Image (cartoon, rainbow, N blue to C red; front, side, top):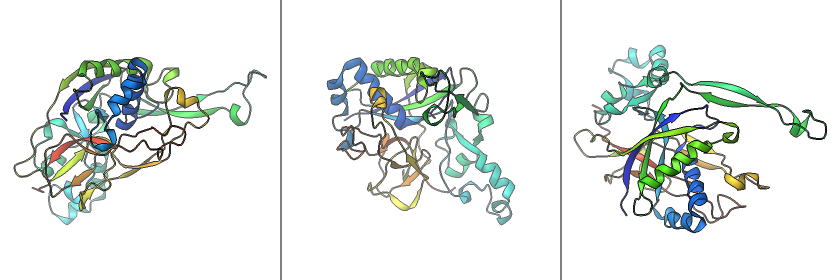
Length: 323
């Protein structure tokens, strides 16, 4: 199998109801492929998906020119070894707010790279703003809202600067799908809307470019860790747990497309390591992605046994030397 890393540059045109998460966007790509090419073509693409042979691995969406800051203890971020700096609460708070690493810093020694971290205000054209949007459901018999399922409710949305540029990293097996077709699938998703409340105007984006991409080489020495760019499932893959760092998230997924209107649209919860995780390995090898495809044997969804979940993540290869 041969996979290629691409970087897609998107422009956001509306607020988002769902964060640009790689596993969610992968699911929409699968639905888009099914709608455009049919069920048999989707099954062909998914052949081998749970056997370490994905047709596509999608990263989270990041502000243009930035990657998510690695999930590491504070001691890795100290510019000096002094106890005063390490224990300064103001410095720790300031470091915590710096969530983004410039892509240009990839390849530098780890400590030097972490010192380039930027805040939301610096990484985005304008800091994203969360807001609550009220919704009403009308009872067609009375013509008004009411109680229970007809009670008014609110949902959060995230607003970005107009035409905010977003980077998306894609690992694609072009023997199964040409990059031009993937670009058309992403374009269709952007026109219809991504994530929650796409039917009422959220999640619209356009695709500016998709180009082959290669991260700068790791600092001199062997590659001994992977830095993830999407939620992934690292369980049982032999990583050096004592030198790995990650944050656990729970995905309470639900089906999309026509299955979203089914009697049971919800999937079973899944535990994943959030984007920005660091997984150390004593068996280094250059790779574009790690993780596993979560299976389609009925464990993820009782209503749709063939359902699969992206447990893969694109990665940056790292040398974890502390210098």
